[in-house]
Length: 274
Ligand SMILES: [Zn+2]
Image 1 (cartoon, rainbow, N blue to C red):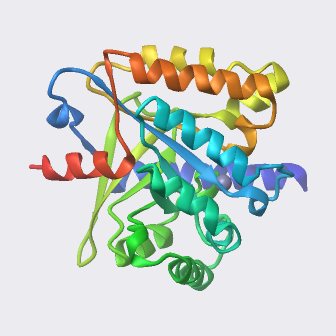
Image 2 (image 1 turned 90 degrees about the vertical axis):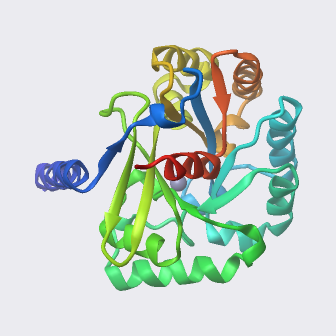
């Protein structure tokens, strides 16, 4: 049975790779590249206990993260689970108060590829209920990077203008767009790394700083890439948090890097489309 399940998963993965290749057009990111600098978006999957992991994230730890970003004058995008917004509203105020952007990571951390269409729509409706208009939600990151067409349609119905998907198969630095008749256009920003990969492979010896800088160095000038984090991972051990702080400081200082939020990048890419 295990091998049948593995084969089905593999088939599904290939199916989505083919769909992605056929439905999405590559955007020439040099259109927003004034001076050949790399554009980086920093994002968080903010899910607390609702992703099924045992976490010990507190509002104090969220303050620590937001403070490090602010101290280096960087803003970021927080893909937040609707149930977190309901349960920990004070932490959302903290995040927004420093100019960070709030986006959707579904209402209850559902896997879109294992959820029926009607249930996906209902999950988006539930998320809407948790977010007043002043939160200005306009983007989406599917849990486990498992995007689906129904998810994209739900995003477009809400006039979201971007989603983020992690992919190591694309050339580092590309962005994409999908157009659906009657629904408009959605920009796809690509994440090239998140801390889960590093954490899984290196355990407590993780060096977020080294792994992320290695990837940053490999991106061509003018490329657009995302670097993701989970608050529960980066605050799980003091040395992991130190490594994260060193990276944020490094990003703030690098002359060849501009850090934007996902929304800023979506605007820049959309406004330059021909
Ligand atoms: Zn998640």
